[in-house]
Image (cartoon, rainbow, N blue to C red):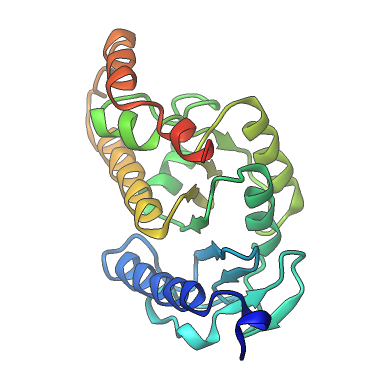
Length: 229
C-alpha cells in the first residue's frame, strides 16, 4: 500500500486498533453481547472503517475490518455490517462526528420496550453527567435492522436540533462522537442512567429546569460543542 492509495496510514492504523480495543472493552463489561452491535470510524480522507457483518465486538481482528470508500464501495476487509448505510447517513447529517457506535445494551433495550419518558427524550435528566455528557436522546420507532427509514428518521432529528445519539426501539442505542473514547464513555453513561431509571422505585424526580440550565451554562451543550467542529 502507498500513501496516495490509502490516505494516512497512521490514521487508519490508529482507527483499526481503536475499534478493536473499544469492542473488546464493551464486550468484556457486558455492554455488547453475541454478534450484536457495530462500530465505525470516518478517516481523515473520507473513507470509513466498520466492523464486519455478524462479527463479535469482543474478538475483532484489525486486519479484517471492512474498509469502504466515501460512497460505500468496498475497498478491503470482510463484508461490512448491514448498518453501513445508516452510519453513512449519520456522517452526512452530522459532519462533526468521526465515529458511530451501536450496541444492544440491555437496559436501554429494556427501556425502549417498557416505555420511555417521552419520544423526544427517552430519559429524564436525573444526573448531572447525563446532562453534561449525553444530552437529549430521542426514540426512533422500530424498523428492521438496516432499514433505510431509520437513517431518514435520524437525519430529520438532526435537522431539528443537535443530538449525539438516538435509541432504536428494541435494538438499542446508536451514538456518534468526535472519537471512539468519547463515544464509548457516552454510551456507558446512557446505559447506566437507563439502569438507574429502571431499577429505582419510586422513580427519582428529574433535575429541575434551573439546575439543567446551570449545568448547560457551566459546561455547554455536549451535542452543540461536538457537532459544530
